Amino acid sequence: MTPTVSLHSKEGRWIMVATILASAMAFIDGTALNVVLPALQRALQASAADLFWVLNAYMLMLAALILIGGALGDKLGRKKIFMTGITIFILGSAACGVAGSALWLIIFRIIQGIGGALMIPGSLAMIAASIDENERGKAIGTWSSVTTLVTMGGPVLGGALADAGLWRYIFFINLPIGVIALLLLATKVQERREDNSAPGIDFMGAGLIALALALLTFGLLRMPSLGFAHPQVYGTLAGGVLLLLIFIWVEYKSADPMLPLNLFRNMTFTGANLLTFFLYAGLGAGMLFLSLNLVQVQGYSQLESGLTFLPFTILMILLARYAGTLADKYGARLFLILGPCIAGAGLLWLSFVKQTRGPADYWTTFFPGMLVLGLGMSFTVAPLTATVMGAVSPHLSGTASGINNAVSRLAGVFANAAFGALAVLFFSAVVQQRIAALSLTSAQQAAVMEQTVNLGNAAVPADIAASQHGTIVTVYHQGFIDAYGNILRIAGGLGFLGGLMGGLFVKRKA
Image (cartoon, rainbow, N blue to C red; front, side):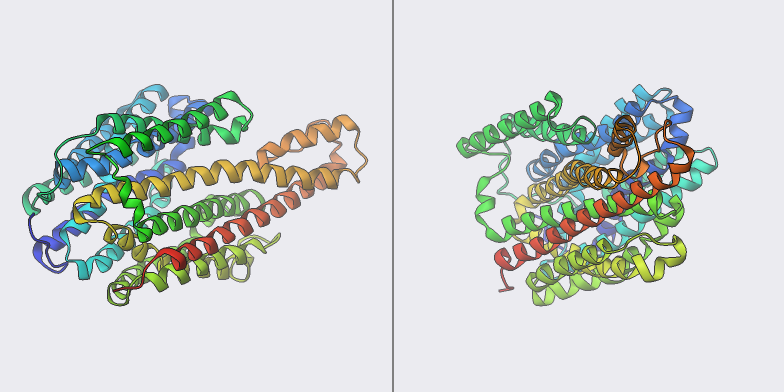
């Protein structure tokens, strides 16, 4: 294998630039697309179902194939697979930019997802395989800081392009970024592939895990709108679990498995992935319901809601690299205990915010909790990623990155599905209790309850007297705030559970 290089060497710097540019494409797309959806819907005359698949066709392919993408990098060469992923991603982006209908946009988003699955685990695998071990945490911290900055800048860019009628440039902007990354990789970065990496490809295992993850992701994505009792939901979830069990059996029997199960005998690797699942499920649920609360109940605009996350972003930019450096020096264990617990405390703090007067109250209501949450995540992200990558042999760094990325993405999808369903239960229980005391007919009460599936967007039914509109709106707002508080307390508990995983499984630095 080609020797590793210093982070501060010429090649080390080019590796960082190329991996950050490639990752930036995926992360900008992920956050900016949400903002341009209204403009996209008008231009393509897309239905609500179309919009669902424009967003989630990419996520479905990414979740299904990301583990395969990481394993292929280990087998066939990380630089080769990384560059292949970037090429597919920019071709898919160009096609998305010229799509003339919602159907074609969905098809081209699938192509983007295939590219992303090869590209995203490759960025961290390139860093882990190329940068000296004693600087790996610092390198990953640098990657985390910059990618966080571009991720949080996505909504601002998307809003500006949508207002100017240029929503297609959300996709076109990927072309120059991707081409520059490809040129740097081709001319400045060497291929790194271990000599002991078995050349065979486990096609059976790859097919099983792709189908299993696709079914699980699809079922979780459909759960909020259809409910768990719908055959489309429980059928796909059951099928996903069954295929996952078959995949484990096939990998156990295989002489050259795509996913070596002995990775999970390493308690640090297993514990770090459990930490990832709990922390990112809590973070995903917390961020989703905080955003809904700010816009639907507290009276923030979309821009103001986005700006409330600035403390989180600034802390990540300032501290993630420093945390990675400290973890290189002292070991990651303390960071992986305290960081998730501090993040959990931030979510817990945010859960106690009730009805406010809007943005004017931000500094005394949401700001302190956001600051604590950002502090916790800043001290967790780089040490966690470095721990996952450092817990396995170098020739499996792509597989490790693919597993960890799959875990974090499934955690986010699971959080949206499970917590979405749970929030409706909390919300409807509060509304049911409060309207019982109002002078409404049973038909009016039923109409009010029908709206609870819309959470903060619940609208007053048409047959409610105008004199009672304000009361019903207040009931909806109070019900949502109660549900929001419960969800964020559970999310905070998941953060503390992540810290427990760090304490139980992550070893002290030898």
